[in-house]
Image (tube, rainbow, N blue to C red; front, side, top):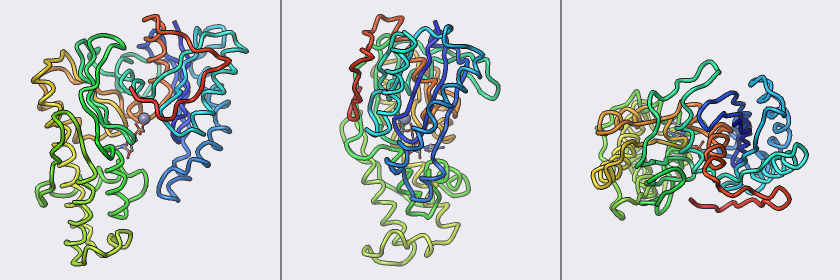
Length: 352
Ligand code: KG4
Ligand code: ZN
């Protein structure tokens, strides 16, 4: 069973074909990141306009890459939430049209759930991907760390889950992006903070781990603590504007601040994950979302977890169509209701 997945919830246009929810046959991601970088963040209007231009070529390229034509595709899966309304509309309207014109069943997919299902992709006909050696087993603990979400989810079986905890304010990826801005690093912040952190001393500064509910997160206090630390290190007052701070800091100071931030963010996640593993004893842990691309988080998790850790290839951690094609496949085999191609709506605030 081959599913074509479409993902346009933020600035990427992702289209991929995945067979039986596990084998990736193509994966095309068109990003408008370079343009957003000039503005220091995603501009929704620009993202949607670029997606409108990119979506049809991405679908064609995805089929060509998989050496398939429409007769080989059994269903279409599309992200209908959560995400930017204008961006979601591009993917959903395209998927609806194709489902009608090509007479294919349509699956509506939750973006965050899609990030988790990227871990079920374990083989590919494509070069350049490192596939997980193990398949996730239930009960499964999913650790979602993305630009929009930070949450712990416990799965008893496919698509059967309960949320253990989530962030009370900013998502972890947001904290990475804001710290990057503060340190004068380029957008997207996650990779640039991670790269700088690798050159710094993680024990140079002590930053706080927020005290919230047992499995909940909070990253806004950490972000403010990094601002205060940067102001103190630069020798300026708390009213000194954050956008001027980076020019007052030495490279070595920035590296130490980045390293201390990353290590605190990783410890924050690990504190909750370790507690959940102790209480629920999962057979595997899945790390999902854009921040799963962070090498330090992966390393610490691998070292500390008593059960197998499954992390998708870095290219499948950030937004892509393959995770949606995989989720759509599992939804189909688990008799999840089909979406109506004449009425499927976007759901920008959809939660898991
Ligand atoms: O999952 P994702 O692509 O989009 C959302 O659904 O939010 O995650 C994007 C987030 C951004 O905040 C980005 O800075 C972060 O993932 N990110 C990273 C890394 N690569 C991307 N954070 C830390 N380390 C990385 N290497
Ligand atoms: Zn995402």
